[in-house]
Image (cartoon, helix red, strand yellow):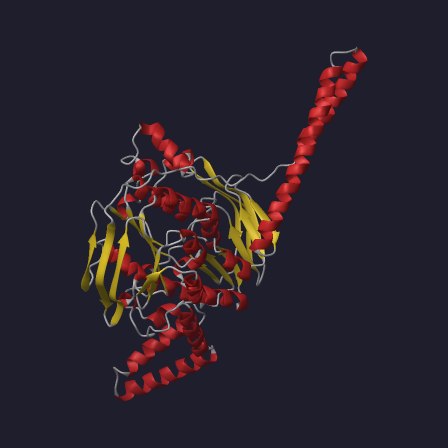
Length: 535
């Protein structure tokens, strides 16, 4: 089904992938995991044919669906295209659907004998469409749209009228409804709320397609895959395991402990024999010859010493406490915002004092990102006001990459923010696990997780004391999420955080929660964790 053999890929002289091989069989569900920057997205793009490897071969079926991390349906379709046009465009009946739609339009513009011919043409196409299960494809596409939270959108609606989040999920619906025999999905839950994630798990469980899934979502990996491919960021090699991701983690720890003990015993024996050989070498000629025998045995034993998997490197960048602001940091009163007939903010009000944390949770389309964009000054509300307190410096972390920084290198990105010259900048980048091979690459070429930790660190280095963070954890591996929580504890800013991740919200220990839609503003309680899961 999908065969990658000895894939090699370089960024300049640096290897990104080094002779990587994997196989996903018919109907098999596999997870591709690893730390941020390990090369997972690069490998998926090679498998999808988006980029060409420097070595190795790729075998995949003709009907393959690939969902990138940041899908944008508007890149492939004009704004005038309908939701129906998009969602069925990758299906086997897409060409017939276009012919049928064109024939239907001709029925409304012709008369007389031409109309009779148009009716006959439409009748033949409609019959062919029905026999090819075109209507069933549309019905299944509608199910996918509902599952991804787009059921409220009419199929005839133009995609130019959709929000960016809706267009992203529409592209996901197009891939999932395509009937492809192989699906390759890169961090699909980044764009889904809890209901959408739950539906995706159910979809992956029932689909007959083979699946290669990149995700840091433990629940998704545990429920949706039966094979793990772990891409090591140090060795650039893959370790394969049959089972769930949790089972793999447990096996990996046990294996590492066993290998550590074996290696320790091997090294102890080598040291003992080497000591004896060195001692005998200084004795008689007979003893010296015996020492040479031991030397050869030691050389063979050194070749047989087992390797122990390396520990994931820890981020080492720490931050001093944020500058002190006035007691009241942010006050929002009656914020309202409407997109056409859809009112997403209906009078949102809250007050945050210095150092408090507000978690904004709710379903997709509820207005969470809209709220943050209004507070950041990137979007104008229809009504209501908000005010910042004394000596408040606001920083906003949003999805995507700022266009004016995409071509900068990480070194240039931090240059205005880090005093102490080149050595200090390199030290700061090393603390973010961005070494020599990353420091002078364009920021746009980094993995999404690497860009995220660079962007978050920039806000703290700029000394913002009010942070608006929109899904800051969505592209981060487990170790980086732990670092982010620790960094926020050290920095202690006032926080407004949007997140669908139940565990991340719990780790933040917010003081307040804003439940959307409905804008219920309450003190945070343990039951809100269940609300995050059940929305």
